[in-house]
Length: 239
Image 1 (cartoon, rainbow, N blue to C red):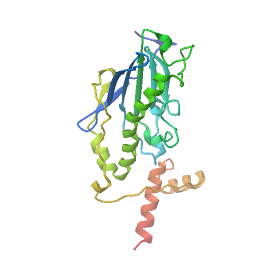
Image 2 (image 1 turned 135 degrees about the vertical axis):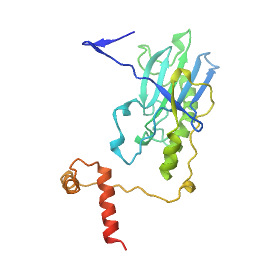
Image 3 (image 1 turned 180 degrees about the vertical axis):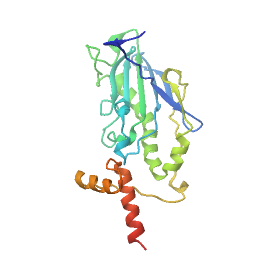
Image 4 (image 1 turned 120 degrees about the vertical axis):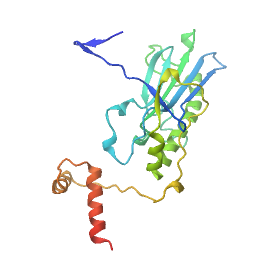
């Protein structure tokens, strides 16, 4: 099927999850005992995480990440990043943060009794009070937690993390094989040969442009301006 708008082809976005020796998406199937609804969860790394301290890395796919809820093949919740799924639940789970970019999670509900599915009567929204949905969230949270932990751990050694991520290959969402857990590279701070820190601060746009211009490029990325000015101070002021 081809869809066109004003003669222009609308291209489909290929939802994929990455796999490698160190990365394995989760795929969990079960039947909800109380309702008989078939539930399937597929989730994992669709793209490399965003280096949260560099806002310039947040690009056009940023609004795709999060959890999707699908009832009888109809998407009723897309790219959710709030408490309608697992996020922003106080002590239970953190708020969504840009460092979690790259995560994709899908929960599918199927039944020949559509009135039992966790959607509203319009079939356009999730019924968050549904028992089958609340029970699924428990499993969705378990699947998501390795991702939040990994995106924190990788900051201790980005070099090792990016080496591990470089070998992943995208697999179409519907071809993911069964796995009870989301597998991700193990990153430990002790792996790092040289401990590093992140430095972040704000300056006026006028001052940024003036410094960037003096460095030879008025449109130089913020991160690079920060690195160059830090290195200048290090070379000229530190013994």
